[in-house]
Image 1: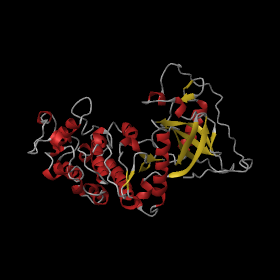
Image 2: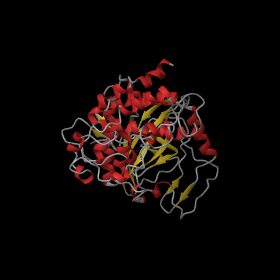
Image 3: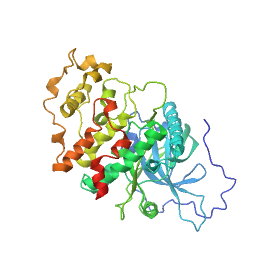
Image 4: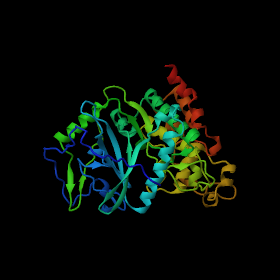
Length: 417
């Protein structure tokens, strides 16, 4: 697969200064202190490209500061230098991936999915609720080649904005957020035929309400440079993601991060062990082939984090086990139907021939679904639980689709108000 790499004969016509290097002095961190990506499992410094502030990537994008990091990449805010002096700055977020074989393959796969997402049906309402890729290119580092994925910059994710509201969203705010996410899911499922598999508050980000927020953040970086650690072959910067509280309502939430996503329209059965522990769908736990409905289960589980400020299903023991997870689900939903167990490759590991759970002693200490909702009362609580039960079903085919959930009375109550 060839990646589109921008090439320019000359940058002399762009009269903006490329210098963002601060004259202020940055705080240097101890060389023996592990920071940022160094704390990731299987960290290998040679796998990460040593990005420098002020560096121009792809001949176009000048790095302003670090936005974040992960197991497979670092993410940077950059300025598009293809602007005349009278034009406003244009910023992008660049994901610089690792150069290992597995991560390079994952990046290629993600880019293919993102191109498909961007073009499947631009007229669909949910298209604007999904973060798409603006550009991609490849750069050469000291130890190999790295793919770079370019996105529009967004605000912080749901969990970080949630901290500004006391750790939980009000029902009216939450309903507005959920509508956007459901529109995005409907677009992914019905138009793109893509299963996200990793929906969580970290992977849903608010849009920027004002580009001047980034102007101020870049200025602040110049005046108060990010702390950093300097080693023999690289500088590791601390991330600065927060652009401050919104002065007006932020842009609509957008589903992001498709590095764990799958096409749902292929011929092969999907059986990988996907999703984070607390959001994992029961068919994944039990070894049943899965499809789009794992995202619906995932979405339903996430409701509690956003409404209650507490995870609904966290595992019966300190270390995740499938039996502990199943015990919690049985307490919340009741025992799985025989039809579900009949499909499960691992049913014999957790249930006897009569369909009885072998670890029943683990079920007793867990709360019911009704008991798990404490911030709502009366009709509002009843409507919410009915909405949630439309997603939290043992049988995948009994879960509502994103399109059906958008018509749910609990969300319609918000629309009337």
